[in-house]
Image (tube, rainbow, N blue to C red; front, top):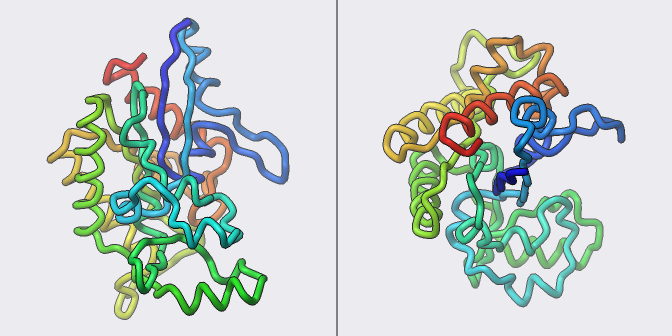
Amino acid sequence: MRRVNLFLKGNLDLRDSLHSLRLNGDLQWNGINEIVRARYPDATIRLRHETFTRSDALLQSGGTVPMELASCDLPLGAYPLSTQFSLALFDADADAIIISAMSDIANRLLRHKNDGYLLFADPATIKVPDQLQWLKASFERLDFLDVEESMANLSAIIARCRRHSDVPILIYNVSSVMPGESIHCHMGLEDIYSTRVKRFNLGLIDLSQKEGISIVDVDSILARQGVDRLKLDPVHLTAEGCRLIAEEVVHILDDVGCL
């Protein structure tokens, strides 16, 4: 049995499509190996997944959690400090690396006013008054990344990965069609989520041309098959949507020689 190791740096879009999708506790989709077992009986996919706060935070991280943060026990949910400051992506022994652009599109970070390190934390989820007061006093809220900043960061991330190993790198783009959205005049709506997604998806095409990375074209796949039935909301997919994305990942992995 051949084992293909994938390192995933991204959030629910990678997890749901490649690992598994659960809705209300029920397993709806059991991940990429459902496809691989049927098409490549002698192969199996092994996944290592880390959540991804944003490209600038990854590049800035020194690989260790700041001491002040380590003692705070902040409720960070799916973004524990060990992952937020991890550099495992850059020395991963993987057959392919898969990254998502969703974090750079959707996330805003906090920057420590004195030490400058970046943190992903939502003050609305912090219920301990002392923690919330410290967070507000110690950090400033950053704006969203623009496309140019994100693509420069992703290019630097690709270069660091390739210094360790020249394995294929895949990047998920993001579906730009929002269920229920109907806009015909964009005046005053220059930076809404769907427009940001379109700009970033175009940026990824330029990045692919420059760096030779593969784009998992989530936007086209879902649009071709019908977004309204494949998306539960702007970011969550149905089981069928997850399966379609996983099929495209298998196709690309086969095309680049991993399978």
